[in-house]
Image (tube, rainbow, N blue to C red; front, top):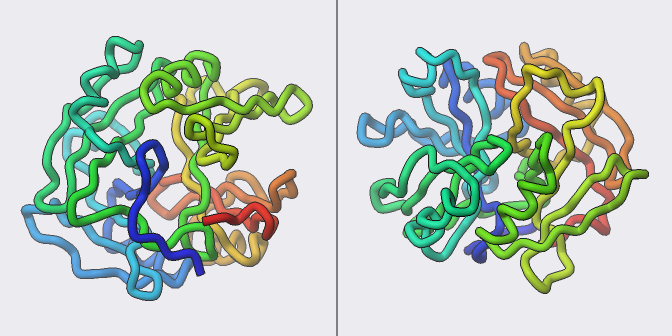
Amino acid sequence: MTEVESHVHGTPSWCDLSTTDLDGAVAFYTALFGWEAGETGGPETGGYTMFFLRGLPVAAAAPQMAQQAEQGIPPAWTTYITVDDVDATAARVESLGGTLLAPPFDVLEFGRMCVLADPSGAPVALWQAKSHAGAGVVNEPGAMCWNELATRDPDAAGAFFGELLGWDVDRKGPELADYREFRRAGEQRSIAGCMPMVGEMWPDWLPAHWMVYFAVDDVDATAARAAELGGTVSVPPTDIEPGRFAVLGDPQGAVFSVIAMKPELLGG
């Protein structure tokens, strides 16, 4: 078990889903991961629904905003990164080449957040916790275990987050598709990844984005179950250096990944 009570500045700490069918999404993810769904929030929360594992929060889902639907934005998972001061961090975004998509605002008593895009255009949220620290379980089956930026300009994105959040970039080299990992300054443990969008596997229409990974015991069984539940398998179960993974889609079209990581890579 990997239970946490708080998340330090500069670490991915939460993820939530914006969907066109909340009831359908809740049914899919509870069946796939064994999550328990909390009560759907009222008008003040926009229908925000928390998912729990052993009574601890692991993720959430909410109906897509009308403006997003009008713009044709597909359902998607959002990565949140904890910061000590969201207002101070947001104030530096545009001077560093990013775009502030939603300025800081309070989320009831739960916390304060903003949404930004790095210079390559990938949206991500920043979270300053109040009563909601973020995920209470990480790095175990059914919980978020990795967050990965896919971008066509990894150098610019790395420089941006280095200045904004103090991240160091560990570049793995061309033999591993020029993959990079982000670390908090001076630390050895990687807290997120960066995949260059190079080659035919990345169609031109696909924008830069953050991918959320959930840990599972059996990638093959999870992919098969997702298909049974009406989801899709975009990348079939595949062995990679950290373990075995697959890219899946829920019935509404939101994309996420699952991975059975090598035990030595699952840290707190």
